[in-house]
Length: 161
Image 1 (cartoon, rainbow, N blue to C red):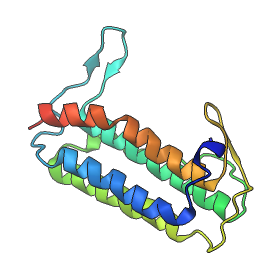
Image 2 (cartoon, helix red, strand yellow):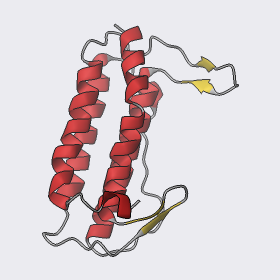
Image 3 (tube, rainbow, N blue to C red):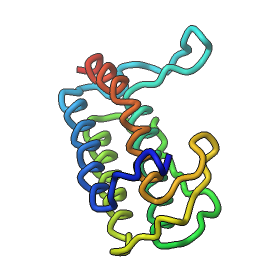
């Protein structure tokens, strides 16, 4: 993945991060009921997620990868678990949804603020599915994961208006 994003510079990450959060905020702007789709089983037996669940999940991914990216950029190894996901069942109102998004944006941007002016781009994190990633690739992988949920956020938001 590092090779695929070698045209992206560290300075590009803050505007790209802001763009993802801006798009999510745009999609949920008309939401009235964040829990309008109760948890239930899909045809394949998996759980159907409501909007609160999707937002809790994608914000956790952004934060996790931003944290790992910051660690790598400073030339450190990543060890242990860094993912913390808000319990989606605690997000029951539009205000709580907006708070979760604002908090996640603040944290992701905060992790970027910890990057040195000359980040270490040789240090790698080995992701189970995505393989080795440097700091930039790792941060972008969180944004990419969130973008992968945008159609789902759009549809759930449409249903929740």
